[in-house]
Structures are given as structure tokens and as C-alpha cells.
Image (cartoon, rainbow, N blue to C red; front, side):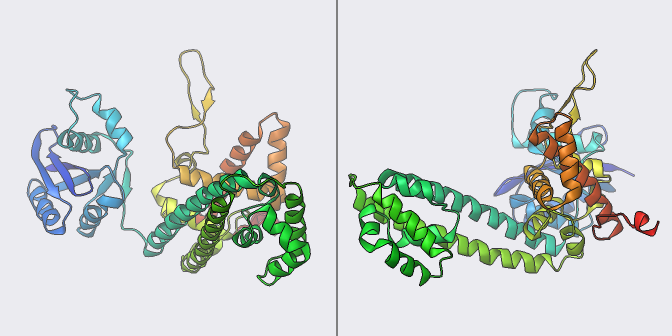
Amino acid sequence: MAAIWAGIDAGKTHHHCVAIDDSGLRLLSRRVANDEPELFELLTDVLALGDEVTWGIDLADGGAALAITVLLNHGQPVHYISGRAIHRASEGYRGEAKTDAKDAAVIADQVRVRRDLHPLRVGDETVTDLRILTNRRLDLVADRTRTINRLRAQLNGIFPALERVLDLNNTGPLILLSGYQTPVAIRRIGAKRLATWLRNRSVIRADQLAEMAVEAADRQHTSLPGEKLAAQMVHTLAKEVMNLSQEIGELDKLIEARFRDHHSFEVITSMPGLGVILGAEFLAATGGDMSLFGTADRLAGFGGVAPVPRDSGKVSGNLRRPQRYNRRLQRVFYTSAMFSIRYCEDSRRFYDRKRAEGKRHTQAVLALARRRVNVLWALLRDGRCYQPVPPIALAA
């Protein structure tokens, strides 16, 4: 049986494919358009070269999505190898030139010799939808953060006293800025009428917010250059932040509704600190199939919460944080661990114990996150929800 290895250097409009045999000899090198007919033709030609083909690709989504789906739908084994791994591996091959053909050949050869590459599988429809929704949410949250920063800078330029006392992550201060932006305007309306204006717009604790705004206005009687135009910009930015917050809220409802369709919803959300959004991001980052990782240790390493050794010579036991991991999954693990310290007694005791051992806050939280990966892994493996007391202890 002739075995063939094919590497695809994926691109936005075109891919380059190189197929090699078990000796590393190139049997095919072709540039193909990212179009279904050409991909089918490439698949047919590569399959004609041998009895068994193993594919490798340097992208797992985006422009490579069509090629991956075509291969998986035809039962072809496809392995993912990162661009960084390709770059480092290329240094061990002859020549300094970098071309798509060389990269594709390196991918094919790496798939031929390595046994630790991540296999790609047909994605679960729910997980795919959650990945799209959570990616969109991350974009909107980033846009809102940037807009809030611009709003703070603009407001600080004309009314620093008000900027200091307002929490622009809340809706009430944004509604205030959508109507009144300058000390003169706030003093003119007064605390009583401003509170009524805010209450009519369903602002919580309108009296307190109005008093804070009037007190800030009483501390500034100087009119700054460009104040009128800057006030218009503050009004516009405040509206933008409110619109983004509303869109994020609507997206959160879609995420929750889609997440509830997944069979692991109850298991994941039963973990203290893992709510709907973080749970959905966990599924989006991992695909929801724990068998791909094999062990909880590999999941922890993929999520960047497992230290890696850095030993050399007589130096041993030297651990450091990994450099290659999924940043998004690490944020899920770290943030959920932070929440669990606040709401879970077991997590709080573990965190306090690590702090008593001399670990810094970040180290203690990462240690807790690592422990929680083991728990989450066991829950998903057994298909049961989290319980503060293990079932064996309850039976005893």
C-alpha cells in the first residue's frame, strides 16, 4: 500500500499543495484557487498517487474552511500544524528561500514524521454557531472598550471633574452624557430637574447621579476652548457606547439560546464561575470534544494554565509559563477561576492556601485554574454536573 502525505499552504484566494511519498520525494506541486471545482480536482489527482493519503494544513478556519470541509466530507484525515511551527521547522530544511511551495512541502513532511499533530474533524453545528457568535461578541466588546476610552478622553478635555466621578461602563452615566455634557448645562438644569430627567429615562439611582453631576459642575466655572464641538462629540460617543451595549445584550441572548441546545450545557454551567458566556467561549475554543485532547493535562496545556519545565544541565525543576497556548481559552480558565473565588468556598480555600504558601495573586489564580481543569474534564467525561461533595463521599 503506497502512502502519500499532502501539505496545503492555505491562503485567502489560492492554496498551494505539495504531495510527497514515504521517502520525501515530491510527487505533485500545484497552486489551486480557493474554489470548490479546483479543490475537487486536486483531491482526485492526489488520491490517484497512492492508496492512502494524509493531509496537513496550516489554517483551521477562515480561508481554509472550504478546503478542510471538502477533505473531511470525503473521509480524508486532515491534521493542523500552526504557522509558527512551520516557520521554525523550515529552518531545518535546505535553503533560505520562503515560498508557498516550500511551506507546503514542509507541512507535508512534518505530517509524515510527526505523531502529535491535532486532527481536524467535522465540527458540531452548535459549536460552530457558538464560535461565530462569541467571536462577534469579542469584537463588539473590544469596540465598546475603545469607544469608552475615546469618550473618557474627550470628556476629560472639557469636564475633568465629571469624568472622574462617572463609571462609563454603566448605562446611567451614558444617558446623562447623551443629554448634558458641560458644567454650564448641568448647573442650568439643577439637581432636581436633572434627577427627574434621568428618572424619565429609567435611570437607576437618578437622584444620586444628578447630585454627583451638579457637584462636579460647581467645581468648574471655566469654559474651555472647543467646548461646544467637544460636547457634541461626547454626545455622539455616549450614544455609540449605548448602541454597542444594546447589541451585546441581544447577542448574549442568542448565545444563551444556542448554548442551551448543546448536550454539555448543564455540565459546563454547573461549574462555579463558568456562566453562559464563559461556557460558550469554552466550547468555541475547544470544540466540545474532549477526546481530541486525550487527557486533562493536554487540555490544561492547550489552555496555558499548566507550567512547562525549563531544565538544562544541572538545573532541574525550573518551571515557567508556556508561550504557545490558546489565549482565548486561558482567559476563560483564568476569569472563571477569579469568579469562583468569590462564589465558591472550596475555590476560596484553595486560593487562600496558595497565597499562604507565598504565591502571588496571579500564580494562585493560575494554580486554581489548573485544578479546575481536572474537575471540568472529569465532569465532561462522566457527563455529570458539579457537586461540592463528591458522590462517593455522599454515599459514605
